[in-house]
Length: 288
Length: 221
Image 1 (cartoon, chains in turn brown, yellow):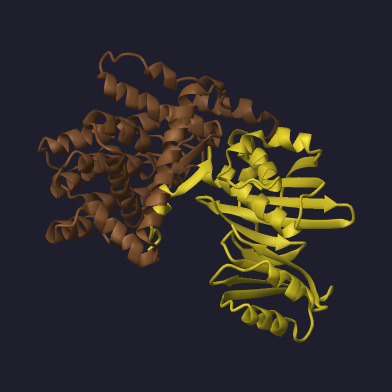
Image 2: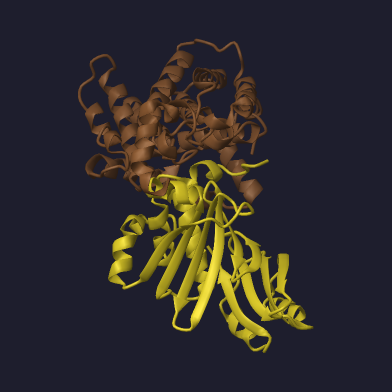
């Protein structure tokens, strides 16, 4: 895997090899697997993402926290403030989030709790930009490499670094992918990642009753909006003063300093509110 | 470097909601069943720590049943595991246990019974769907769900290990790592090793020819 985001982007810039090709070549060499197997595995992940969205939109299920059930479909109506595209993408991300919470089959990207963000952004961007199946696969490759680099230089779990390391990273992966899909430059991709991570820097992991439901499902919504926003800004020429790699480093440090109560223990943040505690008690009264 | 592959980030396909509390729990039970060697008739499940605290909302209990029935974390049938277990007449009991501070917060103790055959497996879900089997019938273990793992229970005798190593050589298998734990009182030993390549089923029959071998299992997940 590439050491840093700048390392990956610069290599592509100097060699002229497109990002996705560079990443696939690295995967082939390092893991000694043929390209065909990599493409098959990518298609498998993409297929499960697609299937999880399709099923999430038609299946009906009750979540352990009843109040959190059946929220996603409410976003599938015409937009009032958000455009229809953005609103629908948010609805898709929430739907996959609900599907995950309801024991549906998903692709962790990077985690199960943040599994709605990347597919929703990718599928909507493909639709808006009228791109091919190959284009979405290439964008997925870029997203995955960015996720891996952030994981190596910071972290990819709420228990280690808070929600910034889950939804924050999912959003950055998505922003990088669609900036690439839209034909953005290397600098624009760097900017999109930096802008995304900065917006969610310090976000805590505070699941009510310790369950991957609230606020996880709806945090996927901000993951989507944030990714589209950052990509839009970057593609419009808005720049980030701080380069992406430095934001990743800041994220790692913020994550390490975050107290234990705010790292997936269900003991702080919204989990520790009056309502959060009441829900916990009502769910687990027999075993507490 | 923790993540060397793009599939570390977008390649984990699993039933939600939690990689540790659902996918990992299923994986432990799946490996436990492989170790038992067949589908158990009766199971006793003891949930420890965080597993005991939040199993309900994460479907940890359902995931464990699914694993015992032979479903992997990628199987969409996991959510129907309770109904399938009922249909297949699996006799089960379920309790919240305190294994003590030495055990990982996401630990489960699984007793599997079929007639006179019994086995207890204790495993932990250590994050991101990764697991570790800590104990088999009180004998210390320490392997995860990696492919090409060979687990052997044998009488603790001179030459037992040499016979195992020779058999692997016969099958042209290179041993990547190998560990042993012993029960001096019962004079038995648990041996687990990881091979570089896939372990063929024929190897089991070959190993069983040695009188000191009690059982052999291939964990290939």
